[in-house]
Image (cartoon, rainbow, N blue to C red; front, top):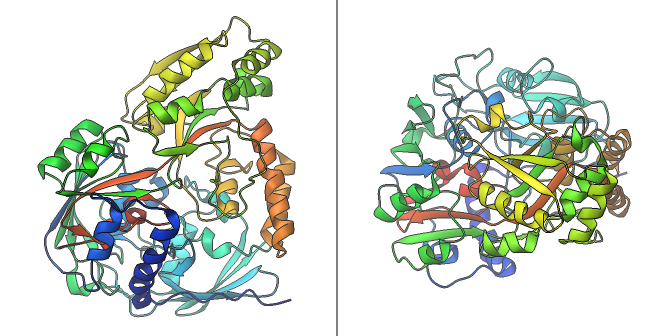
Length: 529
């Protein structure tokens, strides 16, 4: 059996690889080239970023309850800020491959149970402390055992972590996992010094340090300049992040020049923005947010799988994509994976709107005459209320009454999500099928927001993690997805395109294989022309 040895890329290779990859990927992915779409700026960026300037971002995806404690990060604003202040263990490259960040390289034994990681040397925290193995172990342990971290589930397989040397650790798992380095790429797994607890001002190894933070309002960051360890990164003198959750206000601020970058552009107006010669629109096709309505399968009305099927057949996905997303989305199929991911089950029939089937399963659930309540908010995602209203209309054609409860966006993720029977939610893309399925659907996952528990599903996932034969592994993941498709509580109706907007002078804003805003690292990767 061949040893599954993986060696990460060095930091100074990452920028070159990113440029080389994008030239090929843009052609393969079918990105539009006209107007001010991303490829225009991609080929104009050149090899040497310039330093200086203050980057002003207006972002959606945060609230007054936000914290820079990595265990509590749950939306885009905190992700962007956290990646500016701290580094992760492993990062996902533009081709979707695991690359070394603070863990420089790694290898495993033949069973993929025992992994050895080399810690990057010569890296300083903001405080001046040099990074070592103890910092890595402490930062991982923040998410293990008794913790509020959603990563508790994906890190549960860790049996032991041992310091082998000042810059080397060994991690032993309870079972093999050939994708384990990808697990360590999760955005919660950020590194701070051993014993650190002051989350009001994180001590990180990132390109910036925190100047001020008013949750729900703004974040001010100061650049480290030439002191940052990644070549050609961390180019801005400072970054200002403004909370602008209203899409119209955010778009107006971008067009007026009040801000230099914005996330989550409205797909219904993006065609107009593309024609603006002062702006660049960065579009990532079919790998963006999975827009969902989530049903609690553990109690209440949605404990009945027939009612779940009634909802899945009662939504008009095509109408929502055409009307709400202006075509900037692909059909969701009640799965957490997307068609471009390895191990996606393309054999699953695309579920379409069928009011007769919706009516049939609604009656079979004994729900005739019952009103269903859906809690929604623009705090879940910009288009959540509009999607809910079209859902309400399509269910009405099946004789099903859906009551929409619209709530405030602030605090949505702490007061509504995972606390009500039926609500709007979205999922970001994960780098592998295992991480996506484990995070969202494994029985003991902290992020299992449908509370769906299936021991057979858990068993199949465990088998797939150690299976080296690609065909057999694909078969296992197909079985997992079929179970979710038939029985799960995720009603995923659309996979949105990521749509970011920038001033034409902002470069270094390439799309990635994971999240928007350059994997939420635009503060690190960007620069001004």
